Length: 528
Ligand SMILES: Cc1cc2nc3c(=O)[nH]c(=O)nc-3n(C[C@H](O)[C@H](O)[C@H](O)COP(=O)(O)O)c2cc1C
Ligand SMILES: [Mn+2]
Image 1 (cartoon, rainbow, N blue to C red):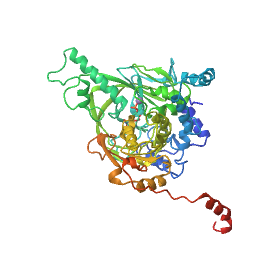
Image 2: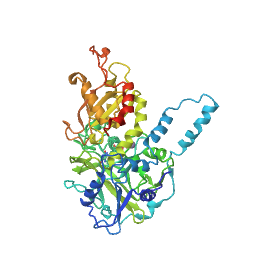
Image 3: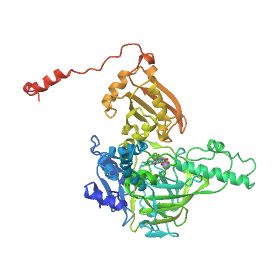
Image 4: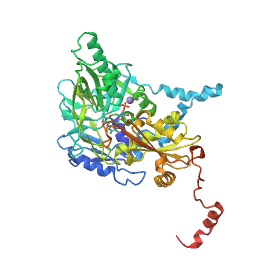
C-alpha cells in the first residue's frame, strides 16, 4: 500500500502516533535543528530509537507555512515509509528478481506470473497534471519564500537538505534522481552539491564535453583552449566539477528539484543505484505502484506530480561558486569547495506547501535509518557480485563510508582480500574507508562479538591490507580531497594454505549436557 504523496504519509504517521505537531513558534535558524537533534537522539540505544516525526506549524518568519522533519527517524518509520513490517521483505522481493531462472515447465511459468505482473508496476507514468501544479509561479518566485533551515552555527547559510534533484543524461536521455543538498544563495540561485563521483555530476560533465566538442566543431574554441577529450575534461574537474584551467564554453544543463514527495521517492533519491537505472523505476518497485510524473513548465524534464514544491531551472556549464561549509553527517563540518550554481526559472507548488527537510550531524540522525534500509535492501544485490557474502553491518557511527563489517563463507585462500577489493570496486561502496571481514559464523550485527573476534584473530602486520583509491568528498582526513587510502582487516580464521601452520584453537563453548543440567537446577540455586 503506497502513499500517494507526502500528505498521505503524514496522516499515516499521525494515525500511528509517530508524529508530533509543534504549534509553538520555532526559528528555522538553528532552533529547529536543536529540537530535531534532541528528538533524533532520544532513546537511541534501542531499535525503536529516534523520537517522533515533527510537523512545525509555526515557523518563525514564515506565517502559515508548515515544515516536516525526522520523517524517517526510526527503524519503525523507515519500515512504514517503505510499506513493510521488515526490510527483509524487500530484500526477499529483490532476491526473487535476481534469482530468476528459465522456467522449466508450465508450473514454473505460472509461478512467475505474479512477478511479471509486478514488473509492470515499476515504470513511471506521465500524467497531464498533478497537485504540484496548483500554484505556478513563473515571474514572482523566491527560494526565500520557504522556511529553509540554517542547521548549524558554522554553516555557510541556509541549505535545502532533502531535495530530490532530477537531471537527464545527455548521452542516454535517462533521468537521474539524486539527493544533493542545495545552499540557498539568494531568491533565485542555490548551490548544486553533487559530489564528483555522483550521477548528477556525470551528467554535468557530459554536458561540458558536448559543449566543448560543439564549440571546437564551430571553430569557436578559444586559442590555447584545452583538448576536448573526455579524459582531459575529467582530469581538469574536481570538487563537484571545478574547471582548473582553460575556458569552458557556455551552455547549461537543465535540472529540476522536487521537495516533499511520497517517502519512497525521497528514499529512492539516496539509494546508490547503478547509474543507468532510473530511480523512478526503483521507487515504483518499492511502492509496488508507478510513480506519476508531470512535465515541467520551463524545462524539458518531468517531476513527481504530487510533490509539494518543484524548482525548475538549470546550471551553467561555466559557472562555479564556493559552497559550504556545512555541518555534515560525519559529525564534522564538511569543508567549502566550488560547485555549480542552480538558477531557478520557475517554482510550482501545492497550495500551502509543506516544506520537507532533515538535518545531518553527529549520528544518530534520521539519515542513519535511511542508510540502514539501504544496507538491508542492497545485500541481495551485493551478493550478485560477491556471492560468498553472508551478512553486512555498517555501524551508524561509521557514517556509512568509514566502516563496513562483513561475514563471508570462506572457501579458498585469500578470499577475504578478494572480498575487500570487490567492495572497493562496487558502486558507492568504493568510498568505504575500512572493511572488516569475518567468517560466516560471526554475527556481524553483534559488535561485541565482532570486537572479540577481530582483535583475537588478527596478526596485524599480516592481516591488514592497505590500498589507495577514491574516498568520500566528506572525508576531512584523507591526504587529498576525494583521494586517499583504505584499510581492510582480514579477521577470518587463517588456513595452512594461507601460510598459517600453527593450530587454530576452538572457541570456548560449554557442552550441552552440562548446560541442560544447570538449566534444570537453576531455580534451586536461588541466584535470581
Ligand atoms: C540527507 C542526505 C543528504 C545528502 N547530501 C548529498 C550531497 O549534498 N551531495 C552528494 O553528492 N550526495 C549527498 N547524499 C548522498 C546521495 O544522495 C547518494 O549518494 C545518492 O545515491 C546519489 O544518487 P546518484 O547515485 O543518483 O548520484 C545525501 C544523502 C542524504 C541521505
Ligand atoms: Mn542515480
